[in-house]
Image (cartoon, rainbow, N blue to C red):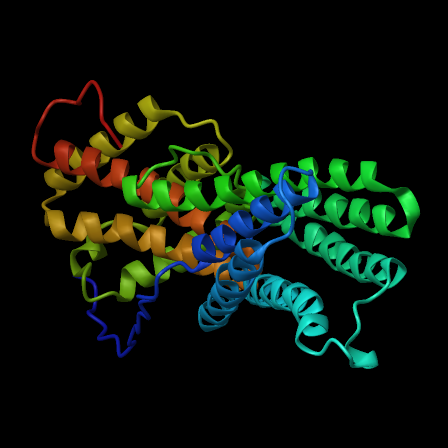
Length: 351
């Protein structure tokens, strides 16, 4: 029997229990943008309703969302929500300050040219935020793309383009707000129902050839962990060659799965046969399942080591990998357990 090695490794798991602040920030932006741009489109004049929602929902609510994004280590969300929250408060201030200090020259209403440059500055900011959104999802790309256009349309109006450009900006701004509202609604509804009812168009940057490129390293690390893990002492009776062959086939199937070409029949047949083989060898079922899950762990650790994701901006990669590895190894454990217990190969699974 293989020598049992006691591991002193301690695994600490940090659980983020904070709510997702993005829907709050997006809805604060969306409703304020829609209501202001209904005014820009000429439906009703500027009034206290627009100023109030600009202060409390577009401004304060987005600032709160930005602070919450900071606590979740999301630099992009922090910058976006705090900046646009401050934008709405500033815009309200532009209209309120001259009314509060009517006879103060420095507090006078800015000229149209000054307002045009104000919108140019925000258009430039929104433009590089759009570039950042290219690594996030399609819904946010639409929001920031439309918002960039909106600011420049408003600048054209105030540079002397006239009321027609204001109306064009108004209708385009309504569409921008609707796009933001959709992004917020999609996040809420998908989270509640735990599936993608309203698609956000996630942008996956998970390299399709990742497992193939690092397969030998993953297999060697898995073999080493298998030999020293206190959860798999009986694997001493299985030769290295057999384990390497098994890991190579399993990793090839994982690679196919991550590449979008899953071979469900092959996966089921292989792990069902593996379970029956390990049962015939007398290895305990918990050790078989531990060995399979150790392989999953090595793929995950290798992804971290080689920078499949490097920051909070790359969380979509981690989410993609975690989801796809979960689906593959859930299926592997199911078929291996069925084969070990002598059950016939199931015709279909629901993973």
